[in-house]
Amino acid sequence: MYIMAYGDTSSSTSKKKPVQKKLTPAQNKKLQEHKQHHSPKHMAMMRRLMRQGSSFSQAHKMAQKSVGK
Image (cartoon, rainbow, N blue to C red; front, side):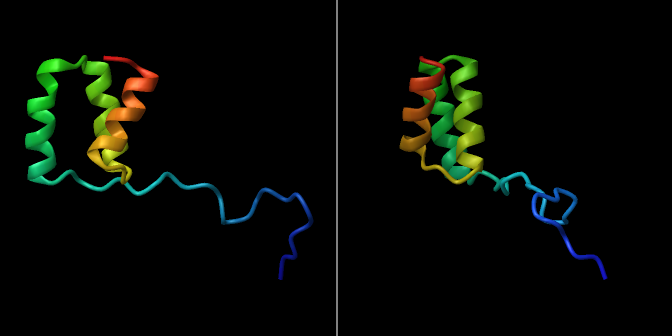
């Protein structure tokens, strides 16, 4: 039996990537309409945020702040 010491990083509870959900057809349709007014970088960030669980408006606000239009 192995007893972990304080600060031991070899545990099996390593950080995992957040679960990425698939976008719904409605979300994809809305993104296609939105795509006409925004850069590819903005859209890529929005898609990534939405797959991680953000709503459309939350993802848009974060993308605007980070990447711009």
